[in-house]
Length: 163
Image 1: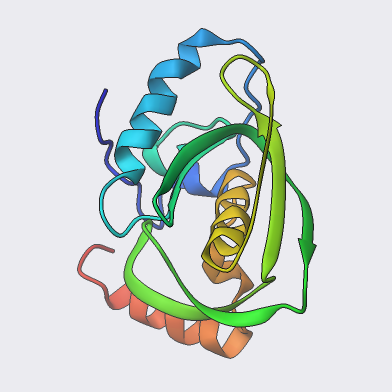
Image 2 (image 1 turned 90 degrees about the vertical axis):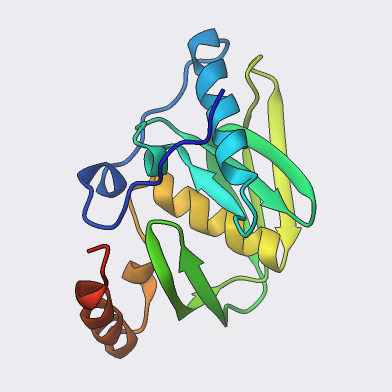
């Protein structure tokens, strides 16, 4: 398939909760391949379907050489004390801000055949799982910033060339 263009902050598709995929819906196979092609660009840890303009619950990931996807992911567990980590987003390019994230996360969903899939991890994988499920719920990571940091982030975003 093809690498797809990333939608940027301000695009309404990023602020809408995504619809679930019906198990076995083979029309989604092309989207999954596009998500995989798009996440394989160096420096990308995850891409949610709404980041490429499609409002369904699906994301791809590329963490520590492991590339894959999940449909209908639900964040079912986080653990450990939330820590401030520098976080960025393809939809808010060029910026990293400190954001609280749990050091462990687990999501459950399905694959294209409707078979159960569980993804879990620590560190970057945990951060990616939390970040991408937030996207599918219509939330950008900047919403979870400390209010003072968020004010500064919004000021900088409004000054960005791409805004």
